[in-house]
Length: 284
Image (tube, rainbow, N blue to C red):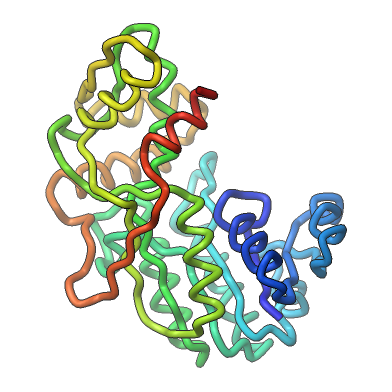
């Protein structure tokens, strides 16, 4: 029995779907029973639990051969790192109490560092704490989500694709579908360790803009905004200032080369291309 959290999001839903399609027994964790109805119809067990509810989460994890967990983003939080540490403590306690033999964690490129990486600090902490539970741990350190470019597509009518890293900086990116499939494969393989996950190829913002240009049929230029505009830009979208400040630190870490994969770990590349993700986002 594989227990999957995050099925209301992209990674968990793909992982659960992949495992069910392979004939595996799956239990999904949802906060609201209504959100589990479609999974129940497909033959999955449904457990209702919040990740911060240790008692309910322990019940959801009981009998698991392996479990997929994550630290969900809290975009409106005034204390994102503190709240995430509480969630990690709950997950670790539940894993320990339920005696889960193998855990797959959605981590991030750069999670080997304790600080200087913005929101990635939370998954660094999760890796450390889950390693203490006695469960075998597979950390999937995903690179920059290709889907993040959707946040820049609103400026296409101006002919630009805005971002906060140098437009000629090449860095790894990956589709959430590839993350979900890698989670499913890691659960079945039961091999502990770190997987550094990226897409078929690394890209620059200029290359992403060129792909978008080809899709929409007009010139699109990649534009780098200054880092001091990260916080006002993010807060204008309703994101809290403390969360926005963490993302500013993350972008600084990407530019400085801190947020990068760790040599010696298993390197895995997905198969979903940037064009596939962007076409889906643009309905083209």
